[in-house]
Structures are given as structure tokens and as C-alpha cells.
Image 1: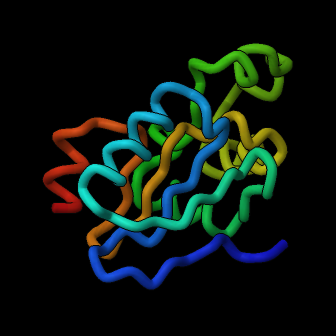
Image 2: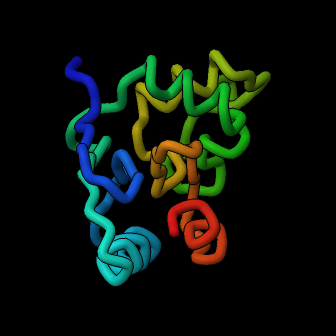
Length: 127
């Protein structure tokens, strides 16, 4: 699987990685980035796949509990055995198999990782 897209823009965010470009949270994040004049490369991991190495890094940095979207329909519909006894390795395997289980959006930037869109957090990290 090809590595995720990386941009070379100067302001700092490497890329915005998400599913469902039309979801409200994703739209808000993209509008916010555009309004700040921050360029980004967009990766739709639902369509383009999720890199297990990148997911492992995200989980190591932010914790599987933050990266795995347990509130979404995809996760809730999984067999109970898949949801039981979760740990980092099992969470990564679930997210690779079911990219809709990745919380969105995820932004990599030189200072770290942002998971989910909270304007105050994004402003503090990216501006």
C-alpha cells in the first residue's frame, strides 16, 4: 500500500486524513484550514486505504482510545468478539480492516497530531 500523501507547504500541517469528505466535522475542518490560508493534502482513507504503520504511529502518539471511533455505526455493528478486549494492536487491525472506524479528521503537523476537530486546539497547534 502506498504511503499517505505528504505536502511540503510551509505553514506546518503535513496532511488532513479523513473519511467522508462531506461530513460536517470534516467540512468544518477543511473550511477552517482554508480560512487560515493553510494548504494541506487531503487523504480519504475510506477510498484510498489506511496504512497500518501510520495507524500504529498515531495510536502510539494519541492512544488507540482517541484514534478509534467507537461511537460510529461501523464500530457498533461489528461482532462483539471484534470489540471485546481491545488493545492497541487489535484497534489498529480493526481500523485497517474498517477505515470508517478511524476518528476524523486526523491532522499530522510538525508539532504532533490532531485527532478530531476542535477549533481552539487547532488554532493553538497550527497558528
